[in-house]
Image (cartoon, rainbow, N blue to C red; front, side, top):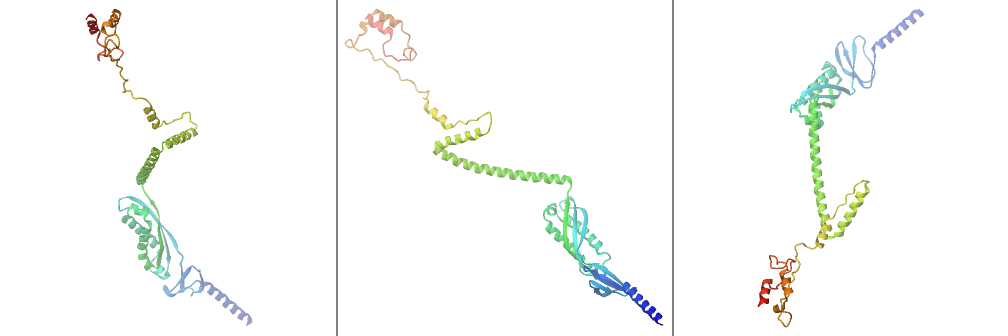
Length: 319
């Protein structure tokens, strides 16, 4: 009798252990449990921890409530300004309603992935290339709204959508590089021209100061010589100031000034000196051998004499 009682107790304990093993379930902290009894969803959602279901009758479905990172495959499309690009993105979402995530949609992960690809293609077609490259924040918000609208009925909340990369054709990359180079060259020229303008103003002020103080130009010349001599070159370039040339020009007499003409005093009367009657024959021969006057009526040496011509002197001697 006692043995039968012990056997029954042991059998009951084994049965209870088997039942508990079949009915006991553990729901993790980041999960929620859905119980289907004969295929019908129970309203109670099992919280994290230890829970018990009816074996064979109930089925427990665990739903992950963590944020899921879903990469969107690269989508190729044509932008609004007719540029072919390849864009890939990533979607961050989580389940907020486990019942709808399991009952309303067959596979909520696959559904979100397909919706993200379709929305990404739509965004590419509605946007310009410049928006895809520089205005990604606005595109991310628009893409998030497009995916989140149908996902609300699936019990899924879109947390964030990010465009990862925009791939451009090689020809477009070279065109953009040339455009950027041209823009940088334009800015460099503008900056250089502005620097030249400022330097010209400063040089004008310096020239005005040096014109008032000539010694400043000499000091500047010495500084230039020191600066050039500091470099170990075989040739020394020495600038010559223009003011020194002007000084030398003022010191040299002008070639246009002619020397003063010398004039001889006319022959006076007989009381003051020998007159024409007192001229001897030797004087007459000397006058005949004298050089002829030049075109201006003067002698060959350039002196103008007021004395009478030799023929007139001879007539005076005969008389």
